[in-house]
Structures are given as C-alpha cells and as structure tokens.
Length: 150
Image (cartoon, rainbow, N blue to C red; front, top):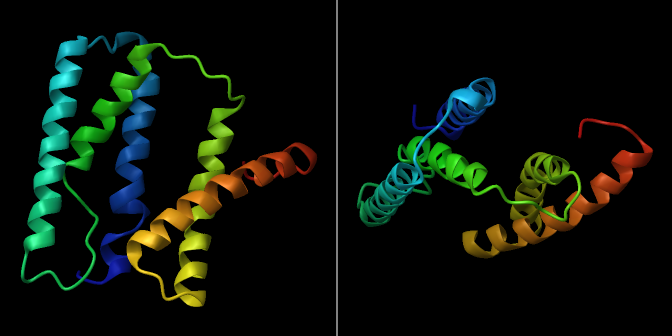
C-alpha cells in the first residue's frame, strides 16, 4: 500500500471531495451553519494540517513526499462553506472553467518539469502553478472555439 498509485488516486483523493461537494450542492438550502462554527472548524482543521505536516516532515521513517493528509477532509469542506457564505462576487467570468482547466492540466506540467529539469519540489510546484494558470487562460480561449472537456 506504500506505492503512489495505491494511495494517490481518484478513489482515495478525488472521490471523497467530489462527493462532499455533490452533497453540499444537493443540500444547498438546508446547510445553515453559523459563521463562528465554520471559523472554528476551519481553524481547527488548519492547526491539524500544520501538525500533520510537521509530523511528516520530522518523521525519521518518512522515505519521501507524503501529501495524503487526513485533516484535509475536515479543512477543505469547512473552507468551502466559509467561502460560499462570504457571498463574494468575482469579475472573472466562468471561474469554473479556470478551476477545471488548472485541475486537468497541472499533472502534465508536473511530469514535464520532472523530466526536463532537475529542480526541487518547491520550484516544480511554483512553476506548475504558474504554467497551469497561464495554460488555463489558453485552454479557455480554445474552449470557446473548439468545445472539449472544459
């Protein structure tokens, strides 16, 4: 179970978060959580995430990168509820297209940068963020002309 494809896949990473989002959408009118409770859960989840990160960083038996944090199942839905309760408006049209484009394109840049460079993980992460954001703009422009998965 210690191989990447066994624990880092849609079933264990993507599906729980997509399903929680689906439930939030389905129960949209019945979700009424006080902002102080959401703030408390978000803060607790953030502290738990920091502790998990610190523990994994200082774990002498850690033989590589580990990013499947249990606290994400707490903090991510809480952050989502906190943000949708802020009632923000954005000047960016089709924000869903931007997030989809970044989600779909970022693995390509991770693999590409690992093959063609010898950069460390932090630099690869930063370059992946920049290249994915830039590419999302291009993909969205292409999506208006040629309809595809976005």
